[in-house]
Length: 196
Image 1 (cartoon, rainbow, N blue to C red):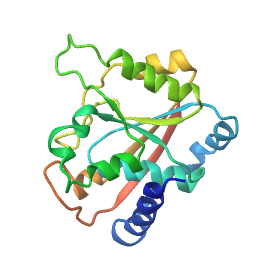
Image 2: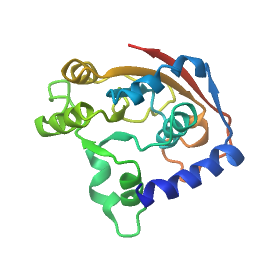
Image 3: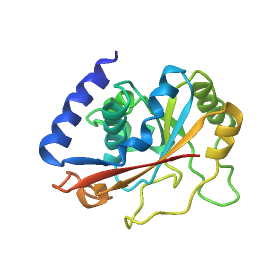
Image 4: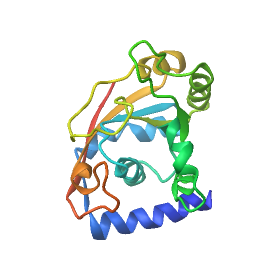
């Protein structure tokens, strides 16, 4: 197992047990995920996105309810470029730990939702039975409210047969919204949703 993931797991365990306690609501709704894991079935995990903490929340929830294993996270390509590649930045370490998959986020309605090579990469991971986290809004909310969904999730599910599993994250916007460098204490909850 990758050392990056093990280190992040230890930090996240402390964070959600001692600093911002995370509550999982309706965990019984995710009972079927164990069967999908055993069958090596592809899964797309979908949730709202308000904070960089959301990645940690989803990983922690899956580790608690299903098993501890690395997920893949779709992340906007700009996180892999520019200021985030500074040699003192933690982003390269974090992106490796989360096995992040870079994709382009369209800026205009006329822009394609994702590049062909990016679409092929995500599809290949799903066909291999990987679990991928996708935020349908494409970026973090600036207000804490749900934003407009981007296209693409349905196409991935249709092409690969992946199950779409939904969830809702509450409290991460209070703890670490856009523009804040360090998370404040807050009550965080993950509401397990349905399979689509």
